[in-house]
Each structure stands twice: as C-alpha cells, then as structure tokens.
Length: 89
Image (cartoon, rainbow, N blue to C red; front, side, top):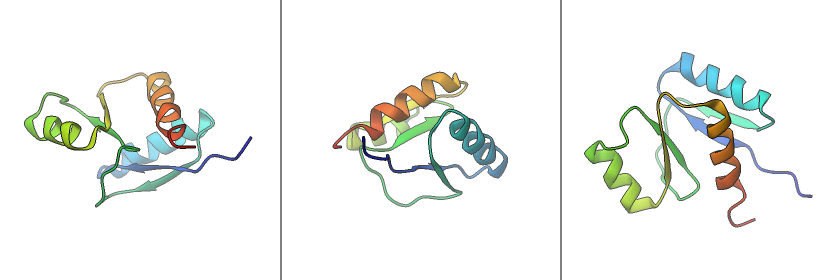
C-alpha cells in the first residue's frame, strides 16, 4: 500500500489550527497546517460555521468540494478526509 500524502489544514485561528492538527494526527492522518490558503480544488474539505451562507454555497457549487459544518464530530472529519484523500489514487 502506498503512503498517503499529508492533509493541508488551513484556518485563520491559530488555536483551532493547532487543535485540528493534533486531533487529526491522533486519528492517523498526516497533517500540514497553514493559517491562510489561496487555491481551491475538489480535494479540499471546507470547515464552516454556516454551510448555507451565500459564499459557502457559491464555493461548493463552483468546486464540488465537501463542506463540514461546525460543530462536528472528529470521527466524521476523519471519515471525510479519508474519502477525499482516496480520490484519484
């Protein structure tokens, strides 16, 4: 089995970024964290407090990316990340 690539976690709140990095690493996922991002793709998972926000809807329609709404279970986050990272392997 090939080794999977790390997941890029982007959040402008450094405390939340640190928490997510730790939680995902404990779930067996390699993580690279950043406090900003410039590019969208279908391999992104967006975490938002409001999935029905006009901007979130526009991004989802344009990119086909998955969204998860806060608050969420870490198990669901890990499941969605594994789904995304298994695409195009």
